[in-house]
Image 1 (cartoon, rainbow, N blue to C red):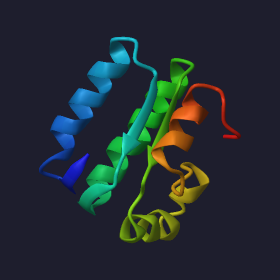
Image 2: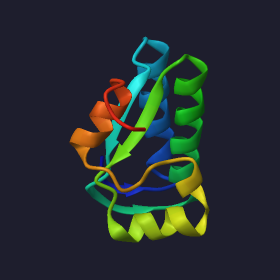
Image 3: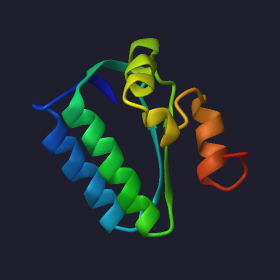
Image 4: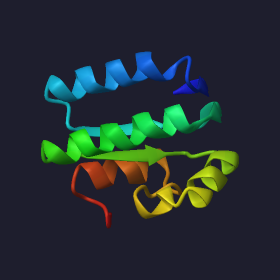
Length: 101
């Protein structure tokens, strides 16, 4: 994911993620390394997508979270929901059942 994840882009991204999940892709890794901005709409999409994957028996992991975004996750206490410090390789291992979680 790159650029802004805000009220403008969130509906399209939500639609894409939920379409993937509905199609059976229930183990997802979202790489945020190139993300420039996230707001409450973007956070809401991530949380709703995590809930959907979990409901289907899957998982959603975030990888390469930029420092500014990590701060937002800490302030909103989403660090209790998402592991926001892992590399892409670690996130893939977790969703494939090979990591520590």
